[in-house]
Image (cartoon, rainbow, N blue to C red; front, side, top):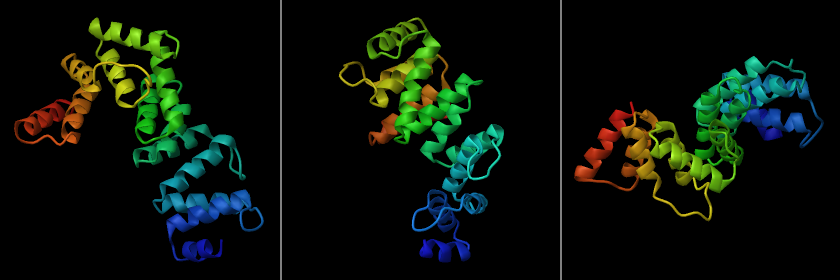
Length: 219
């Protein structure tokens, strides 16, 4: 705690967030929720996204002396999510019930960042959109049926399940084939995923040019 105090006094935003965390939970000394809240705010203003996330959490739950304010919490979660913090993306999704597309997007970003809540949320989002149960067999059948019927969104969703390893124990075509189909049906995200997959495979020469065309189509 002493090191965090010193760092925060020297305007280190990360140290301020760590100190806030320690004070909030009473680690290394007494709890001081109100000071913790001030430190999270200071860290967030200093560009430490975990500080924004912790500040958002305080406003969402109305803890540490923060007034319960889901609108502010959502804005803080989205800011941290856009900066690349997966747990913040899951938190943003939890407050986006009124916008299913945004909710699914946040869950996908979180899942791609390794956040298990994001992965579970993405599966539920896809199942809800299809009127299916979040069981692998039924979800796959619905998505593949939709994709075969010309739904770009179903193709993209099917590719996501495969790409993110959410279909353990099942065998299917690689995710790239679904992303390619989604792109052909007009999904910019499908195009971007197809191009990214090709680049990630170490494509060179004509394959690299093809990957760049996929990415351009996704812009």
